[in-house]
Image (cartoon, rainbow, N blue to C red):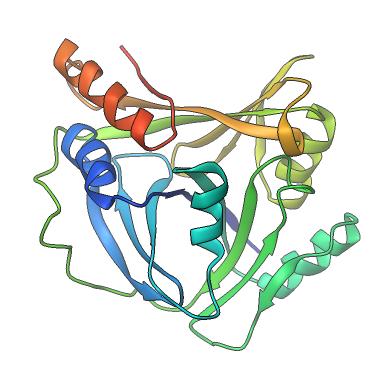
Length: 244
């Protein structure tokens, strides 16, 4: 059984801001996307690290989770996705860990999924999914030309219960312990996918994504890149660190 940190999903009412940041400045290239009940989604890939997925609401009479998310907190990080080779085995492991998954849907042979509520997942939704095949779709017409290639080097996530978060990400979601201290722990998955957990008390729901860090494959970010990234990231409810 394999488990891979596949992507970080960001909810936004304005996709153009996300395209400008994650493609125009940070060099993300189109993977695939499409319509789902209540939202539209699209994924961007990088030279290394997890993908970025952008989510935006689409009118649906019964599925309004993303509209509620944006109304409550505004644009921002929505979930971590972990792709697994055997979702039923992962769900058994999650339940043995003492967590009951929600939104479990195993009906489709192409896409099976389940979620961990942020109250039990240290402040952010966690999606586990099993996918069959490699879907393809045309990129949106408004997607800009990618900037110079980048790596998504690091996701830093702050948590109140560091030991509990380490057990979840390491023992349940197969992260490899790369560096550990009393206040910070770094875990990795294949492909340069890295989460740094940092202890911080008093956070709503026991945790919050702090920032993501990108690095250019070659060359350095310019002052203009940094200013533009900062403005766009603020509109997306994120902090983006540009390395180097």
